Image (cartoon, helix red, strand yellow):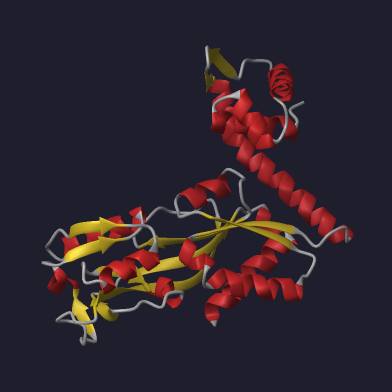
Length: 295
C-alpha cells in the first residue's frame, strides 16, 4: 500500500534532485528520506529513481507517481480539513499564494474579514506570479492561488475558478510629458518612447499589444518591482503600462496616468482544486477575496 507520507517524500526528492536537499525541505534526516523511498519502491514493486553518482532522476514509474501525487495529496488534505471542521476540531488552515499587487490590495482586506468571521482559521501567505502560482496549486503546494491572466492565455479547466475583477491597464508618463494631460491615448502614440517593462508575463503582454498597434517597444529598463517602474517613469526615463490594481498600492511621484486605447485588461481570479473547494476554510477564503474585490 502506498502511503501519503511516502508520496510527500517522493515529491520533495523529485523537486530538489537529491535525498539531502529533500531532507532539508522536509525537516528530517537524509537516512529517513532514504528509508521512506525504499519503502515506497517496495510498495510500488518497481524502481522509482535512477541514481548515478550525485545525480538522481525519476524512472517512468516515478514520473507517473509524481504526476498523480499532487491530486492524491490535495484530496487527502481536503478530506482531513473537512472532517476536522465538521468534528469541530479546528476552524481550518489555508495556504494562500498571491501575486504582489494582489497581496498589497485584495489580500489584506480579505484576510482581515476572514479573521473577524472565522478567528480560528490559520492562513499562510506566499508570493508568486502566475504561472508559477498556478503550478504550485496543481502540485499541492498551496490551497488557493490569487492569479491573473490576459485574454487568450492558458485555460484552467481542471481548476475551480472564482472570477474577482477585470483589471484595466493604464499608461504611466512623466508629469511633464507631452501627453500627461491627455485623458486617454492610443498606444501607438507612444511608439517612439523608451519603455520601462514590468514582470515577464506583463512584459510579454506589452510587446504583444504594441506589435498589434504596429510597433515594437524599445524597452530600456525591466523590473518586477512596481514602485521601481513608477520611479523610473517619474525620473523621465521612459513610459510604462501598469495594471490599475498595482497603482492602488503606490503613491507615485512625478508621473501621470493616462487611459489606453484600445483598452487592455487582465482577469483577476482566485483558483483552487475541485477537492479543496469543498473545505469550509477554503470556501470562506474565496468568499472574502470576492468581497474584497467588489469593494
